[in-house]
Image (cartoon, rainbow, N blue to C red; front, top):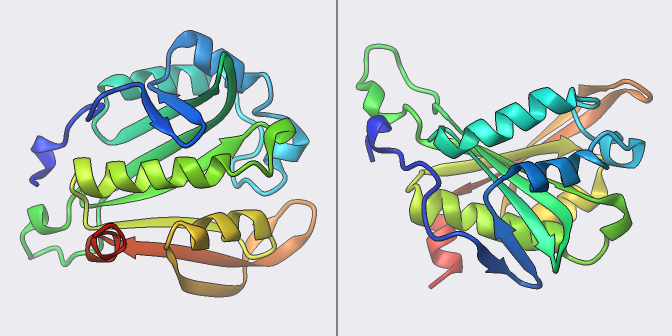
Length: 198
């Protein structure tokens, strides 16, 4: 798929993900995430720790018309319990090659879960939907996700989703409270996703 053909908010929404209903962001949903987004239990393992609520709200609502960013809000009944994001990026490619071969062909994914709702599989449910969105609907070639190596919960989610540990960096990631820590990058290719979903 060429860069200019990337869809905005592909597919039908809302949609189910296990026990969750995933919807595109709206002011009510984003406000609900913002009630716990800056909680220290949420930010402990994030790179972008405290955020400006108005900036996040503007960014997420603008994702509705931005084909390079896809955000979902996860509802359990009438309660917002998590969110997921997919950012489309360029792959690595030589400057004299055809940029359409690597431009907007990869993505990073992440999720946020209300700390009161952890341990119920919500992050895994969201990861599966975001991978399906990336490969089946946006037709990307590769998806990655990074985390601190000590963030065992995130590592379990990524491994459970079928992503493989592609890079383990020794003390390559700065943590404000713990100093230099090891970091991990997980990845999946489109063909790997297809083989998991035959």
